[in-house]
Image (cartoon, one colour):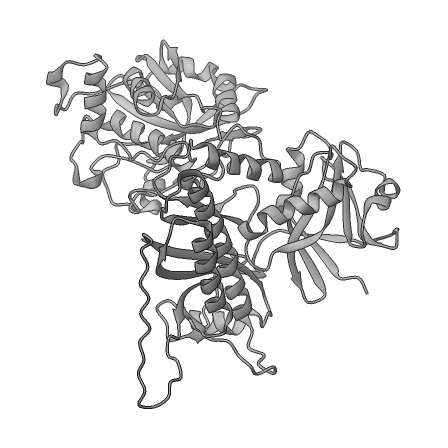
Length: 561
């Protein structure tokens, strides 16, 4: 009997954005009597006689260690403008699952056996509730010589340590320890483990459940009683001691009894990525550098993607850029925006800053369509960082919000500039006199654009309107900005500055609402208060002063990856 097939909604969402026919591999998780497909790779036609599906298989192997443990090859995909003819695909295929589909989502799905296609019905997976997200951490310090042989030998020893059954996983803030078991009848499932950790408390309906485990190594060894021995080895070779911090990720299906094995596999996949990174560094620079793991959450995929990048090497390095290019190509991502840089892992300098405070708000404009900021931003407002800028710092805070957007999207690793940093930048380019430093003088949209260019080499478009009422006629331009650029907009008029992070626009009537992030808030970082008191809310055209003119700073997203 053929297994039940579930395909993530993200697969069909991604297909809608594809424009060029392709072949590729499907990957996902095998459950008992079912197959959960989470994503696909994109392979261009091979230049030699190799089958397009064979080429796709080789490309999936290149990113297998980047995917969560438990995620494996699940079949093939063939996508075109219209649903491809299945019979023409069969000669190139091995026996497996096949999804033949159009970019609009129409499809034929089934299993191939001996060049015969048996159609099956698929279900769409709307959430990840049945797959536990497990993160496993492992730390130690390693001493490496700057040679390929040293790296190979050392990482082989670590791999043996992970696979020998002597490691134990510990759930943080609990008395739960998970070890290897030789008891073949051990039937404790991941659900049992989660229930013990959570105390029987269930999470929100359909929300993915997660476990965070630390790795403990049993270093005790059996020795003859009363005998102590030491082995000392001297070497003239220089060794560098660097930290090794693995952050393995696994997707464990509900009902699985393989939690321990998948945790080990998660560390082994991560270890392989770190070893490859060390090899690349030594090949290029004949040196040893620390390598850090970054767990990237791809918004349009629904799963994480693990990267291992050396610390101290800029994102523009040719070797790192080439690896990112490979990831983009295999996953069918355009080379127009970053997806795999360090900052794409969601790292922010201040964990107290709220992010994406608009989530949960509804525009409620009849016949309207929402055009929103794309990605993540931090909400910066008066009085944060124990700095009193009430009454004069609103544009500075709007600039910090925009700057945070470029950090979160991976365009920069630079820290958020302080008020003094902003003033210093304006003085350095000759826009302000030295007396401006340390003052409480306002800045406007033009100064914000100058700072973005100074700090990030980002260009901006400045839109000018004679009055707040004139903004009612700018719906189409603002919609185009959020569709093509997706960046927050700083708007200044009179003595006030705000950040526009979206619009709700009815193209037939011209009616327009603005999603406003208000930097004049002075309270605590409480999302409910911020939304209910209107500091992040939808505003009508009447929000703008009809007697004041306004300048809008509309940052342009750079084309890079």
